[in-house]
Image (cartoon, rainbow, N blue to C red; front, side, top):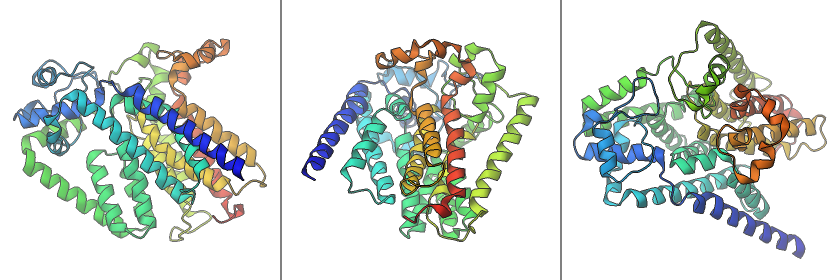
Length: 437
């Protein structure tokens, strides 16, 4: 017992060292390119230049043309690659207090907040599995996160994905704890920030959680009205134009891990992996996409209605986990850091499989989960798409890796999600054989 406790303490020490080095120190001086758009937008609003809030290139998604927005970024001292602002005006309006501190300091604050959000999310996931007091599981979770590319990518960019992920986990935790109104309000806030949580709203509709749905829609209404009153109508017209111009368009770039991105990589030039030009799928691939989406949605409905009724409170989180997967794979543009949200489904499946040690196909399912994790967690650099880290050079130089087609090499995250969907569906269909948690 004493030896086991000592090993757990040592493992926790290793986990804390990994998190400090790979999640904080490594990105301490990052320019946080994605956060720059929020910071600069807050300054644009503060200076009354709302007409320039949504400056964007007509065909390159990631480029801001020269103008007031880029000029404001230069005045703020930003030296990285400036991206367009794509959120509701209210969020930058509320971020104006950050303008009191230099941009270089603000990025460090964002980094620390994101790391704290991830640790709190891990706590909530472990709590759902009744492992919040288990030092060994804490250590395993922290180490896994420290080498999880979607998280590290989000921290490097200064993205808000860690905070969104905390919101997603908190939504389910609050509903499970009997707080549907708070959960719905939180979901409404996320919907105002990103549209992808619409799948979570659909989940609660299918579960007939009317209180959550009504609270979500009420929150969206209040937030939109407050945003218009705070910033003005013109900025919101520009926001709607920014959203609608992306209809039917996607990217073939390596960091777009959606279904659209996967299909585009098969019909475009390999150079588009490094390009962020907005493109259409074309008729044939649109048909393929519609058929694939239909199959995925049917699989989701299967998880809802077979073998347990929708009203049954089995609290296994699998249907909610599948909704999170849909958030990642079905939007036309799903950045690599969105894959961070898959930490919830991975945790749920691991929780269920923990009591499945002697069932047939147990190791096959665990093997599928491991394959999915590796495909999602490893950076695409190991196949030569971006600069390869030194610890992955042996893998990058392995002869077989150079024979992998670029559309496949650039879609590791998407393919990992596909495997995860199969694993979730299989575990659900067999869960009557899994002991109750």
